[in-house]
Image 1 (tube, rainbow, N blue to C red):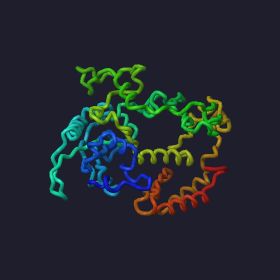
Image 2: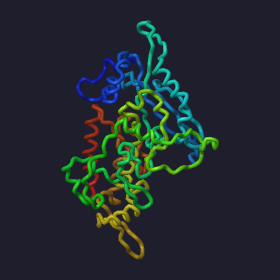
Image 3: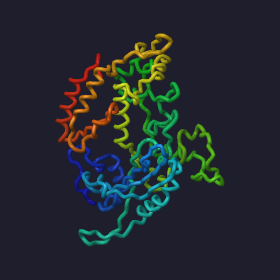
Length: 390
Protein backbone atom coordinates (compact mmCIF):
# COMPACT_ATOMS: atom_id res chain seq x y z
CA UNK A 1 0.00 0.00 0.00
CA UNK A 2 3.00 2.35 0.09
CA UNK A 3 4.41 1.32 -3.31
CA UNK A 4 3.33 4.66 -4.81
CA UNK A 5 5.73 6.36 -2.41
CA UNK A 6 8.72 4.14 -3.23
CA UNK A 7 8.25 3.11 -6.87
CA UNK A 8 7.60 6.25 -8.99
CA UNK A 9 9.29 6.53 -12.37
CA UNK A 10 12.73 8.17 -12.43
CA UNK A 11 13.21 8.30 -16.22
CA UNK A 12 10.49 10.84 -17.04
CA UNK A 13 8.05 8.24 -18.39
CA UNK A 14 4.62 7.44 -17.00
CA UNK A 15 4.08 3.88 -15.81
CA UNK A 16 1.54 4.55 -13.05
CA UNK A 17 -0.84 7.41 -12.13
CA UNK A 18 1.70 8.51 -9.50
CA UNK A 19 3.91 9.68 -12.38
CA UNK A 20 1.17 11.94 -13.75
CA UNK A 21 0.71 15.67 -13.29
CA UNK A 22 -2.73 15.34 -11.62
CA UNK A 23 -1.32 13.18 -8.79
CA UNK A 24 1.69 15.43 -8.25
CA UNK A 25 -0.40 18.61 -8.22
CA UNK A 26 -2.70 17.02 -5.64
CA UNK A 27 0.29 16.22 -3.40
CA UNK A 28 1.50 19.82 -3.61
CA UNK A 29 -1.92 21.22 -2.75
CA UNK A 30 -2.62 18.79 0.10
CA UNK A 31 0.82 18.21 1.55
CA UNK A 32 -0.48 16.99 4.93
CA UNK A 33 -2.36 14.18 3.20
CA UNK A 34 0.68 13.31 1.08
CA UNK A 35 3.00 13.05 4.12
CA UNK A 36 1.33 9.78 5.14
CA UNK A 37 2.07 7.22 2.37
CA UNK A 38 -0.51 4.82 3.81
CA UNK A 39 -3.35 7.21 2.94
CA UNK A 40 -5.43 5.73 0.14
CA UNK A 41 -5.88 7.09 -3.40
CA UNK A 42 -9.05 5.88 -5.12
CA UNK A 43 -10.49 5.88 -8.62
CA UNK A 44 -14.19 5.38 -9.36
CA UNK A 45 -15.52 3.52 -12.39
CA UNK A 46 -19.21 3.23 -13.32
CA UNK A 47 -20.99 1.97 -16.41
CA UNK A 48 -24.17 0.17 -17.42
CA UNK A 49 -24.62 -3.43 -18.51
CA UNK A 50 -27.55 -5.69 -19.33
CA UNK A 51 -27.55 -8.71 -16.98
CA UNK A 52 -29.89 -10.68 -19.26
CA UNK A 53 -28.65 -12.78 -22.14
CA UNK A 54 -31.62 -11.59 -24.20
CA UNK A 55 -30.61 -8.09 -25.28
CA UNK A 56 -34.14 -7.41 -26.52
CA UNK A 57 -35.18 -7.08 -22.88
CA UNK A 58 -34.05 -3.58 -21.85
CA UNK A 59 -32.44 -3.34 -18.45
CA UNK A 60 -29.67 -1.09 -17.11
CA UNK A 61 -27.60 -2.36 -14.18
CA UNK A 62 -24.96 0.11 -12.95
CA UNK A 63 -22.06 -1.21 -10.84
CA UNK A 64 -19.96 1.48 -9.14
CA UNK A 65 -16.46 0.18 -8.50
CA UNK A 66 -13.55 1.72 -6.58
CA UNK A 67 -9.95 0.75 -7.26
CA UNK A 68 -6.89 1.54 -5.14
CA UNK A 69 -3.93 3.28 -6.79
CA UNK A 70 -1.53 2.83 -3.86
CA UNK A 71 -0.51 -0.55 -5.20
CA UNK A 72 1.87 -1.16 -8.15
CA UNK A 73 0.46 -1.23 -11.70
CA UNK A 74 0.53 -5.03 -11.91
CA UNK A 75 -1.82 -5.21 -8.92
CA UNK A 76 -4.06 -2.11 -8.90
CA UNK A 77 -6.05 -3.31 -11.95
CA UNK A 78 -6.52 -6.86 -10.66
CA UNK A 79 -10.08 -7.92 -9.90
CA UNK A 80 -9.21 -8.85 -6.32
CA UNK A 81 -8.28 -5.20 -5.64
CA UNK A 82 -11.63 -3.79 -6.86
CA UNK A 83 -14.33 -2.77 -4.40
CA UNK A 84 -17.93 -3.03 -5.56
CA UNK A 85 -19.44 -0.17 -3.54
CA UNK A 86 -22.82 0.21 -5.26
CA UNK A 87 -25.01 -1.81 -7.60
CA UNK A 88 -27.73 0.40 -9.06
CA UNK A 89 -30.58 -1.64 -10.60
CA UNK A 90 -33.43 -0.48 -12.79
CA UNK A 91 -35.08 -0.92 -16.16
CA UNK A 92 -33.64 2.43 -17.25
CA UNK A 93 -30.37 4.23 -16.68
CA UNK A 94 -30.41 6.65 -13.70
CA UNK A 95 -28.94 9.41 -15.96
CA UNK A 96 -28.42 12.71 -14.11
CA UNK A 97 -30.32 11.35 -11.08
CA UNK A 98 -27.48 8.95 -10.34
CA UNK A 99 -26.49 11.33 -7.51
CA UNK A 100 -29.40 9.96 -5.45
CA UNK A 101 -27.79 6.52 -5.45
CA UNK A 102 -24.30 7.95 -4.91
CA UNK A 103 -25.28 9.68 -1.66
CA UNK A 104 -24.11 6.97 0.83
CA UNK A 105 -20.80 6.54 -1.01
CA UNK A 106 -20.10 10.28 -1.12
CA UNK A 107 -20.96 10.61 2.58
CA UNK A 108 -18.39 7.91 3.40
CA UNK A 109 -15.80 9.59 1.19
CA UNK A 110 -16.39 12.89 3.01
CA UNK A 111 -16.03 11.20 6.40
CA UNK A 112 -12.84 9.30 5.53
CA UNK A 113 -11.25 12.48 4.12
CA UNK A 114 -12.08 14.75 7.07
CA UNK A 115 -12.01 12.41 10.08
CA UNK A 116 -10.20 9.33 8.82
CA UNK A 117 -10.45 5.79 10.18
CA UNK A 118 -8.35 4.10 12.84
CA UNK A 119 -6.32 1.33 11.19
CA UNK A 120 -3.59 -1.06 12.28
CA UNK A 121 -0.49 -1.42 10.09
CA UNK A 122 -0.03 -5.17 9.64
CA UNK A 123 3.72 -4.87 9.01
CA UNK A 124 4.61 -2.67 12.02
CA UNK A 125 1.59 -3.35 14.29
CA UNK A 126 1.16 0.44 14.72
CA UNK A 127 -2.27 2.05 14.92
CA UNK A 128 -2.67 5.12 12.70
CA UNK A 129 -5.44 7.28 11.25
CA UNK A 130 -5.96 6.52 7.59
CA UNK A 131 -7.51 9.06 5.22
CA UNK A 132 -8.62 8.50 1.63
CA UNK A 133 -9.31 10.63 -1.43
CA UNK A 134 -11.11 10.11 -4.72
CA UNK A 135 -8.72 11.22 -7.46
CA UNK A 136 -11.02 10.89 -10.50
CA UNK A 137 -13.65 8.81 -12.26
CA UNK A 138 -13.23 6.51 -15.30
CA UNK A 139 -16.19 6.24 -17.67
CA UNK A 140 -17.38 6.28 -21.22
CA UNK A 141 -19.01 9.46 -22.55
CA UNK A 142 -22.66 8.75 -21.51
CA UNK A 143 -21.63 7.79 -17.97
CA UNK A 144 -19.38 10.83 -17.79
CA UNK A 145 -22.40 13.02 -18.56
CA UNK A 146 -24.36 11.42 -15.73
CA UNK A 147 -21.59 11.82 -13.16
CA UNK A 148 -20.14 15.20 -14.12
CA UNK A 149 -23.38 17.05 -14.91
CA UNK A 150 -22.14 18.26 -18.30
CA UNK A 151 -24.38 16.90 -21.07
CA UNK A 152 -22.56 15.02 -23.82
CA UNK A 153 -25.16 16.00 -26.43
CA UNK A 154 -25.92 19.14 -28.38
CA UNK A 155 -23.83 21.94 -29.83
CA UNK A 156 -21.69 22.25 -26.67
CA UNK A 157 -21.13 18.55 -26.04
CA UNK A 158 -17.37 18.74 -25.42
CA UNK A 159 -16.69 19.25 -21.72
CA UNK A 160 -13.10 20.31 -22.44
CA UNK A 161 -14.01 22.99 -25.00
CA UNK A 162 -17.04 24.01 -22.93
CA UNK A 163 -18.92 26.90 -24.61
CA UNK A 164 -16.23 27.08 -27.33
CA UNK A 165 -17.12 23.63 -28.71
CA UNK A 166 -16.68 23.75 -32.53
CA UNK A 167 -19.91 22.28 -33.89
CA UNK A 168 -22.33 22.66 -36.76
CA UNK A 169 -25.60 21.17 -37.94
CA UNK A 170 -25.58 18.60 -40.75
CA UNK A 171 -28.19 16.17 -42.05
CA UNK A 172 -30.13 14.80 -39.06
CA UNK A 173 -27.25 15.29 -36.58
CA UNK A 174 -24.60 17.58 -35.17
CA UNK A 175 -21.01 17.41 -36.36
CA UNK A 176 -17.84 18.55 -34.60
CA UNK A 177 -15.44 19.66 -37.32
CA UNK A 178 -13.14 22.18 -35.66
CA UNK A 179 -10.26 19.91 -34.74
CA UNK A 180 -7.76 21.87 -36.84
CA UNK A 181 -7.85 24.51 -34.12
CA UNK A 182 -5.50 22.34 -32.11
CA UNK A 183 -2.73 22.42 -34.74
CA UNK A 184 0.07 24.95 -34.40
CA UNK A 185 -0.57 28.24 -36.16
CA UNK A 186 1.54 27.46 -39.27
CA UNK A 187 0.35 23.89 -39.88
CA UNK A 188 -0.45 23.28 -43.56
CA UNK A 189 -3.84 21.71 -42.81
CA UNK A 190 -5.06 24.99 -41.31
CA UNK A 191 -5.06 26.47 -44.84
CA UNK A 192 -6.65 23.44 -46.50
CA UNK A 193 -10.20 23.80 -47.89
CA UNK A 194 -10.84 20.03 -47.94
CA UNK A 195 -12.25 19.84 -44.43
CA UNK A 196 -15.20 22.25 -44.49
CA UNK A 197 -14.39 24.57 -47.37
CA UNK A 198 -12.82 27.16 -45.08
CA UNK A 199 -9.44 28.01 -43.65
CA UNK A 200 -8.95 27.62 -39.91
CA UNK A 201 -7.57 30.68 -38.14
CA UNK A 202 -9.00 30.20 -34.66
CA UNK A 203 -6.82 29.44 -31.66
CA UNK A 204 -7.39 26.30 -29.58
CA UNK A 205 -10.17 26.61 -26.97
CA UNK A 206 -8.80 28.00 -23.73
CA UNK A 207 -8.27 25.72 -20.78
CA UNK A 208 -10.95 26.28 -18.17
CA UNK A 209 -9.77 27.06 -14.66
CA UNK A 210 -11.47 25.47 -11.67
CA UNK A 211 -12.65 28.93 -10.56
CA UNK A 212 -14.44 29.47 -13.88
CA UNK A 213 -16.14 26.07 -13.65
CA UNK A 214 -17.39 26.89 -10.15
CA UNK A 215 -18.64 30.25 -11.42
CA UNK A 216 -20.65 28.49 -14.15
CA UNK A 217 -22.11 26.02 -11.65
CA UNK A 218 -23.14 28.83 -9.31
CA UNK A 219 -25.45 30.14 -12.04
CA UNK A 220 -27.47 26.90 -12.11
CA UNK A 221 -30.92 27.05 -10.51
CA UNK A 222 -31.42 25.13 -7.28
CA UNK A 223 -32.93 21.76 -8.11
CA UNK A 224 -33.60 18.72 -5.91
CA UNK A 225 -32.58 15.52 -7.75
CA UNK A 226 -35.18 12.89 -8.50
CA UNK A 227 -38.49 12.59 -10.32
CA UNK A 228 -41.01 13.12 -7.52
CA UNK A 229 -43.66 15.61 -8.71
CA UNK A 230 -43.68 17.35 -5.29
CA UNK A 231 -40.17 18.66 -6.05
CA UNK A 232 -40.77 19.51 -9.67
CA UNK A 233 -39.09 16.34 -10.90
CA UNK A 234 -40.05 14.51 -14.06
CA UNK A 235 -40.77 17.76 -15.90
CA UNK A 236 -38.46 18.58 -18.80
CA UNK A 237 -37.14 22.10 -18.69
CA UNK A 238 -35.35 24.00 -21.43
CA UNK A 239 -31.93 25.16 -20.29
CA UNK A 240 -31.22 28.87 -20.33
CA UNK A 241 -28.25 30.25 -22.25
CA UNK A 242 -26.33 30.96 -19.04
CA UNK A 243 -26.53 27.29 -18.02
CA UNK A 244 -24.57 26.23 -21.13
CA UNK A 245 -24.65 22.40 -21.20
CA UNK A 246 -24.77 21.87 -17.43
CA UNK A 247 -27.67 19.73 -16.24
CA UNK A 248 -26.80 19.75 -12.53
CA UNK A 249 -24.11 20.40 -9.96
CA UNK A 250 -22.47 17.02 -9.43
CA UNK A 251 -22.62 15.50 -5.98
CA UNK A 252 -18.82 15.08 -6.12
CA UNK A 253 -18.45 18.83 -5.59
CA UNK A 254 -19.47 18.18 -1.98
CA UNK A 255 -16.02 16.66 -1.50
CA UNK A 256 -13.73 19.36 -0.08
CA UNK A 257 -11.00 18.75 -2.64
CA UNK A 258 -13.04 17.98 -5.78
CA UNK A 259 -13.25 21.53 -7.15
CA UNK A 260 -9.43 21.85 -7.01
CA UNK A 261 -8.64 18.66 -8.98
CA UNK A 262 -6.98 19.20 -12.35
CA UNK A 263 -8.38 15.96 -13.79
CA UNK A 264 -11.82 15.01 -12.56
CA UNK A 265 -13.11 12.60 -15.21
CA UNK A 266 -11.25 10.18 -17.48
CA UNK A 267 -12.59 8.58 -20.65
CA UNK A 268 -12.16 4.81 -20.68
CA UNK A 269 -9.46 3.86 -23.20
CA UNK A 270 -11.21 0.62 -24.11
CA UNK A 271 -14.35 2.44 -25.26
CA UNK A 272 -12.36 4.99 -27.22
CA UNK A 273 -10.18 2.43 -29.02
CA UNK A 274 -13.13 0.15 -29.74
CA UNK A 275 -15.36 2.90 -31.14
CA UNK A 276 -12.66 4.56 -33.21
CA UNK A 277 -11.39 1.22 -34.55
CA UNK A 278 -14.91 0.06 -35.43
CA UNK A 279 -15.60 3.31 -37.28
CA UNK A 280 -12.25 3.24 -39.09
CA UNK A 281 -12.48 -0.38 -40.17
CA UNK A 282 -16.21 -0.10 -40.87
CA UNK A 283 -15.60 2.81 -43.24
CA UNK A 284 -12.68 1.01 -44.91
CA UNK A 285 -14.67 -2.21 -45.32
CA UNK A 286 -17.98 -0.48 -46.23
CA UNK A 287 -20.04 -2.48 -43.73
CA UNK A 288 -22.90 -1.47 -41.43
CA UNK A 289 -20.48 0.39 -39.13
CA UNK A 290 -19.34 2.67 -41.95
CA UNK A 291 -19.57 6.44 -41.50
CA UNK A 292 -19.50 6.90 -45.28
CA UNK A 293 -23.27 7.11 -45.74
CA UNK A 294 -25.45 8.78 -48.38
CA UNK A 295 -26.22 11.56 -45.90
CA UNK A 296 -22.51 12.18 -45.39
CA UNK A 297 -22.05 12.50 -49.17
CA UNK A 298 -24.98 14.95 -49.32
CA UNK A 299 -23.33 17.06 -46.62
CA UNK A 300 -20.15 17.26 -48.69
CA UNK A 301 -22.18 18.58 -51.59
CA UNK A 302 -23.92 21.17 -49.38
CA UNK A 303 -20.55 22.39 -48.16
CA UNK A 304 -19.17 22.44 -51.71
CA UNK A 305 -16.10 20.34 -50.90
CA UNK A 306 -14.62 17.11 -52.28
CA UNK A 307 -16.63 17.13 -55.49
CA UNK A 308 -15.24 13.73 -56.51
CA UNK A 309 -17.23 12.14 -53.64
CA UNK A 310 -20.64 13.65 -54.39
CA UNK A 311 -23.53 11.32 -55.17
CA UNK A 312 -24.04 10.64 -58.87
CA UNK A 313 -27.46 10.07 -60.42
CA UNK A 314 -27.99 7.12 -62.72
CA UNK A 315 -31.42 5.77 -63.69
CA UNK A 316 -33.11 7.97 -61.07
CA UNK A 317 -30.92 6.51 -58.32
CA UNK A 318 -28.03 8.00 -56.39
CA UNK A 319 -24.72 6.16 -56.47
CA UNK A 320 -21.69 7.12 -54.34
CA UNK A 321 -18.35 7.09 -56.20
CA UNK A 322 -15.82 4.69 -54.71
CA UNK A 323 -13.49 6.64 -52.38
CA UNK A 324 -9.76 6.16 -51.98
CA UNK A 325 -10.13 5.36 -48.29
CA UNK A 326 -12.31 2.22 -48.77
CA UNK A 327 -11.34 -1.25 -49.95
CA UNK A 328 -12.54 -2.62 -53.25
CA UNK A 329 -14.23 -6.06 -53.01
CA UNK A 330 -11.10 -8.03 -53.90
CA UNK A 331 -8.97 -6.20 -51.33
CA UNK A 332 -11.72 -6.45 -48.74
CA UNK A 333 -11.71 -10.22 -49.07
CA UNK A 334 -7.91 -10.40 -48.88
CA UNK A 335 -7.92 -8.18 -45.78
CA UNK A 336 -10.47 -10.36 -43.95
CA UNK A 337 -8.63 -13.55 -44.93
CA UNK A 338 -5.42 -12.11 -43.55
CA UNK A 339 -7.03 -11.03 -40.26
CA UNK A 340 -8.69 -14.42 -39.92
CA UNK A 341 -5.28 -16.08 -39.94
CA UNK A 342 -3.58 -13.72 -37.48
CA UNK A 343 -2.33 -15.35 -34.28
CA UNK A 344 -1.75 -12.98 -31.35
CA UNK A 345 -0.04 -13.66 -28.02
CA UNK A 346 -2.37 -14.68 -25.24
CA UNK A 347 -4.35 -11.72 -23.92
CA UNK A 348 -3.42 -9.33 -26.74
CA UNK A 349 -6.63 -9.59 -28.78
CA UNK A 350 -9.96 -11.32 -29.26
CA UNK A 351 -10.72 -14.28 -31.50
CA UNK A 352 -11.13 -12.90 -35.02
CA UNK A 353 -12.39 -16.08 -36.62
CA UNK A 354 -16.08 -15.51 -36.01
CA UNK A 355 -16.07 -11.71 -36.20
CA UNK A 356 -16.90 -11.54 -39.91
CA UNK A 357 -16.58 -8.02 -41.22
CA UNK A 358 -16.64 -6.48 -37.74
CA UNK A 359 -12.93 -7.02 -37.19
CA UNK A 360 -11.65 -5.17 -34.16
CA UNK A 361 -8.22 -5.95 -32.87
CA UNK A 362 -6.08 -4.30 -30.25
CA UNK A 363 -2.32 -4.47 -29.95
CA UNK A 364 -0.83 -3.52 -26.61
CA UNK A 365 2.39 -1.62 -27.29
CA UNK A 366 4.39 -2.85 -24.36
CA UNK A 367 8.10 -3.60 -24.60
CA UNK A 368 7.60 -7.30 -25.28
CA UNK A 369 5.13 -6.64 -28.15
CA UNK A 370 6.77 -3.77 -30.05
CA UNK A 371 8.64 -6.08 -32.43
CA UNK A 372 5.51 -8.12 -33.05
CA UNK A 373 3.36 -5.02 -33.66
CA UNK A 374 5.91 -3.62 -36.10
CA UNK A 375 6.13 -6.87 -38.09
CA UNK A 376 2.33 -7.20 -38.21
CA UNK A 377 1.96 -3.64 -39.44
CA UNK A 378 4.61 -4.20 -42.14
CA UNK A 379 2.98 -7.42 -43.28
CA UNK A 380 -0.48 -5.83 -43.33
CA UNK A 381 0.73 -2.91 -45.45
CA UNK A 382 2.31 -5.22 -48.01
CA UNK A 383 -0.74 -7.47 -48.39
CA UNK A 384 -3.51 -4.88 -48.39
CA UNK A 385 -3.32 -2.22 -51.10
CA UNK A 386 -5.94 0.18 -52.35
CA UNK A 387 -5.80 2.40 -55.41
CA UNK A 388 -3.82 5.06 -53.56
CA UNK A 389 -3.60 4.56 -49.82
CA UNK A 390 -5.54 3.44 -46.76
